[in-house]
Image (cartoon, rainbow, N blue to C red; front, side, top):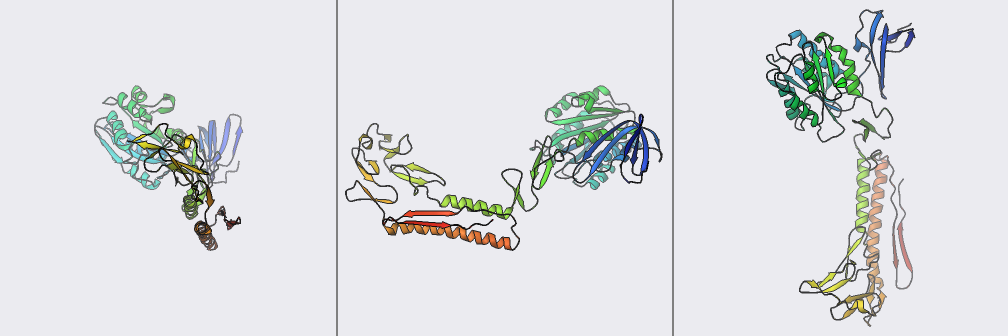
Length: 468
């Protein structure tokens, strides 16, 4: 078997024995378990099993780890027992274990954040979730932690983590349901205070609790602290020297599945969340309403402004309405109002007279019959006629005629202003594109204005400008 490759590259079996190349060295393992993790930039193998022979001497389980997993974002808090029963050399081993766990995770402000609560008789928050977003600085901080000695106030440590570390002020992402809250307790003794109630409160608040017991640790207390099922959340090792055996287990648990690697339709960036994934855009872009594609910020702004402008410029009342008294434009629609002394009827269109603050019932003369060509206005005990927008009342005070050319020209000016604005926007977009500031296309619907002149000739103004 040629093991010239610097990474895990070949597996083959001879009966119950599996031969594995790791870092250019051949290992022979029995009862082998292999977990393969991959993303677009790297692949990782977790290998565990009993080493029966090796061409390089002793095999260390973490040797086979080729790169970091792309784990789901986590707010992770280590709660570390440093009481008198933990000897200095053992405390160093515990810190090394935490560093190995951190080394396998993706650390960052948008990835996993880590905090450390150190405890004995007293509790000390060594650093918060918002302190370190750089993995090397985080590992260095873990290495520099000193033991506190004295008693074992585990319940107080859990309470401190819940109330002072898993908070927004301390860097916890409490408003995001996609960010898991995880606490890992490492202890070698029996708690000197109660842990059942405070651990239950922590679990109820959404914190997933893991308990790691070493040597003299009380198994019952570990089970009281940990989340269910206990088989997945309670661990025990004989001494601090063999804690490395748990590394692959925690790595597998904390990494989970990379939802993005399973397939996504994000245009720019896919971010794995607790149960699924969500899309983000690169700097200078904004996420579109489909939550998948991205648009340049400047283009997005132009389109938004143009949309708002076009919808506020259109006078819906001028397009025709059926309000009896007053029509009020409201963007892409209109509402009706009544003149002073009248109230709007239930149909939201017609009006009734008002006496002493109350609507006059049954006094709508228009409703009883009228001869107005277009609009009848109730005046209490009589009525008068009016015309819709674009028409004027004739001398007979009943029929209506179209407005004169001078009044139509005023509306033509409004249309010309709309066309001019859109033309300037198009020229601006074309100039930005020519300078390679814009690369995305924009399609603008043409503005059309139609006016019927008294002579019967149609004026049709249309801006067919568009940029694709």
